[in-house]
Length: 220
Image 1 (cartoon, rainbow, N blue to C red):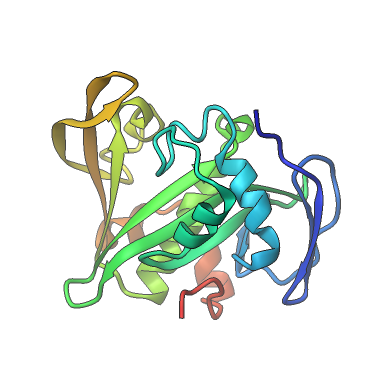
Image 2: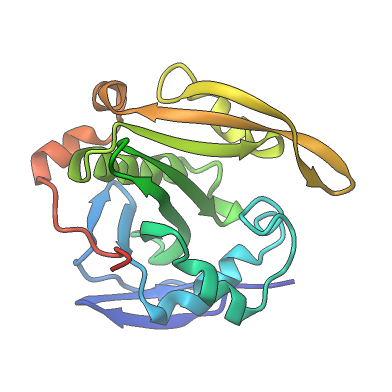
């Protein structure tokens, strides 16, 4: 079993306590709304991100499909094919609660893929929806992507199903696409269309008010 450790992070004018326990977080987030802030991914948080993704209930549903990577492998793959990513922080808890990623960016076609992972304790809190919305706002408004895709295993689809038709478009199903825990399972393809997202985003008004800050966490 992997538990989050309490560590102190100070980077780019930010200070927070990640993992178990409470602390403080100074201003300096890339973008924020309500209780959620997105901050850049820096080496000081790699260990905490590793521990977050190794938690039971997370590792089975993240990119490793239940195969526990070494810390060195995790760090090596953290930025592989990733265009931009942010740590997700709860401001009231002053805890790192997730990671959002954009990868496989194709600027000729205006497309990219996105991925989200959160500690299980926040799934019912509404914080993942806010974090995802802030991230998608950035990808649509700052970088001009016209379509953003996610591949969602059948076992995770219930997290997205209520947003299909409102925030997402279900564009297809890859039948028996993934081998997981002794059987083959479907993978759903969902997409965010930029024009529709501008009308439906629950956080777009905050972006309009704040403007679009220079992003952190870009793989350069």
